[in-house]
Image (cartoon, rainbow, N blue to C red; front, side, top):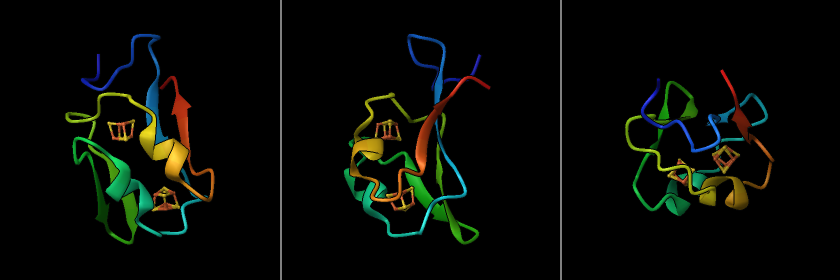
Length: 67
Ligand code: SF4
Ligand code: SF4
C-alpha cells in the first residue's frame, strides 16, 4: 500500500496536462508537491489527499488514480 492512499483506495497524481505553473505547489498544505525534472510531482509519503492541489490547478492536470 502506498502511504498516500486515500480512504477510498485512490491516489492523487499529476498527468501530462501539467503546464508547470506551480499553483499546486503553493496550494498544498503539507508541501508534498515539488518541481522535478521539468515537471511537478506529488510526494506520496507526504500527501494527505486533501484535494487542494486539484482545486487550484488551471489545467485539470491533477487527477485521482487507482494504480
Ligand atoms: S491532495 Fe492535498 S496533500 Fe496531496 S498533494 Fe494535493 S494538496 Fe497536497
Ligand atoms: S497547478 Fe496544475 S498545471 Fe500548475 S504545476 Fe500544478 S499540476 Fe501543473
